[in-house]
Image 1 (cartoon, rainbow, N blue to C red):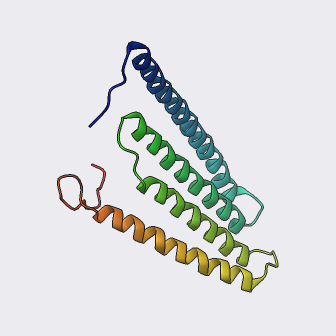
Image 2: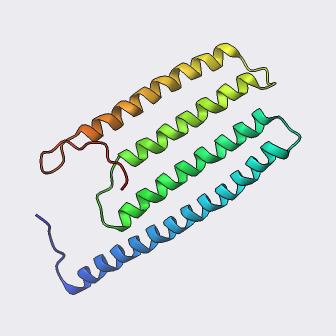
Image 3: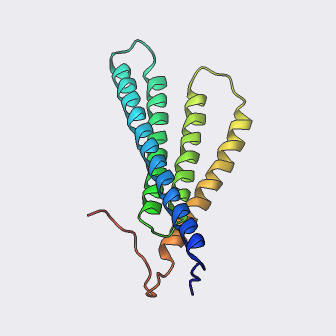
Length: 163
């Protein structure tokens, strides 16, 4: 049961705060999509450099993947803000996906570091890769459980594909 505020001043304050929240979410959404566009522009430059640049394609490829995965994280956060603007209930799944992308991004950075010229400690990197692999498994299992959770009508939600 929803409790309504008593008095016109309190109702006005609540309305003001709700609209302020929407304006802030809208601004954050615009900033996130602007950041994603700027990062995409940078990734195109890296991709061009990978083909015509004088440097190592492995280093350019690593940098390209790093930027693209960052774009995916920013877009997923922007999508979460968009859901908030629509008035939907904030869901945990987008945050788990962002975390999953961040962990995969870190795994790729470590893996490319092993191939590259740096002389990192192999045992330290192996330990970190093992921990990160465990985190990936936990994130994937959490996403699986969230998708298998019954919705309000009691039906199990299947993986949704965009139309």
